[in-house]
Image (cartoon, rainbow over all chains, first blue to last red):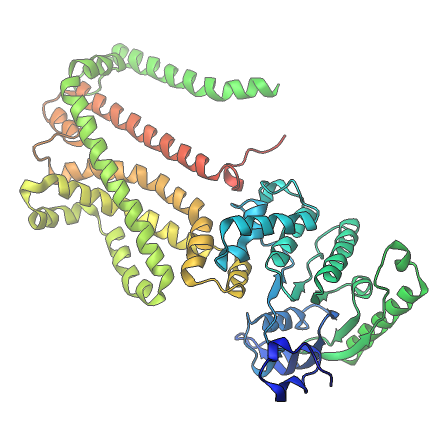
Length: 267
Length: 264
């Protein structure tokens, strides 16, 4: 238990003193789809403000379902998602870039601002800034079909950060990219997270990607998904190529790998 | 080598078409077929100029009926499809009517329409008949197009608090645009077919369209004039197709795969 910035709770003294630092809590979440598939059995998870949490697990274990439930795009069968007050603005990045092909990179990045009724000029400025931050300055007028897979994903990330979210949900965003592009985007993502003090929930298949990015890795069991292991990592704030070769990284990756294997074996 | 192929792309059809005309001309002369049965290309060419006082206004009249039916078909097709996408109940309730209109032979409706709309309003009857023939393709293409919007983008828009209308305007309609344009291309041709067949079955009012010119010419055994009218219909149909293909290119070439030139 700890106190937090009181501004948001002005006038609510009783709340002020007993709020912990978690940004969101999943309690007793289960999800069964209409076709009878039980995607998630029971998921309890507490996500702290500023965490970089990776959800790792085999295909079909309900990672993406969990992400969509957090975003409010799916309704859980049982359980609930509780957010800190005020509810943090959410950005979402899919595995596919999911861009509007008829719109330029700038218009794509501007989408959340347009939907929220921002003035065109201000929205353009913010979207252009977001594109510049993901390394796409000069590509504002490019259409998605003129961009490479990595660049499209950068537009997708620019769109997510243009609305200045506090919570960023990412569903295997780099899975379809080549290794070097993926590593470059990993580093850029860490930089964005640092600069914007983001909380990130990142779904991935990759043990190494989750180890490199995360301060916490949650390993899920095969379907129906539950938490099999919850590992706290302590990576340095600044990470680069040398970190990938460090004993700490290989040790952490080993722990994640072992946890994943035992989750699979226990199922 | 590539440049040669591009050149042949246009040369081959022109040469083959010209050869077919020559063959036609020669065959009719050689076999002594009566000009009342089959006119030669040169007869048709002559008839085109000799009867231009009849054919010219008839062309304009058919164009007018076609254009009115086509615009109505496009507007109604897209509007009704949008209505369907906004309410599934409306779609379930009204789609059967659209299907009935589509599958009922227009020839069978013509006499009733003449009674309802009136024999002194034949032009309206023609437009309605041509509209019935041409509107369903716009409707069904637009319905499919509106449903083809990326589900993840729809989710994303919902996440950012988009209203139903924002999703329609910013996502569904642009996604449907290639489908709408395909529907319009087919509809343009159907509207012309509708305008001509409507005249066959509903007759002509004070004005004379190409369909009625063909009917009268064949009754008078003026085969050359009937062929001339037919040729004008072909030219009109091709012009409509070209215009709509141009519109499609203008709206899609920046982004849609179908209209993007392949890099080589």
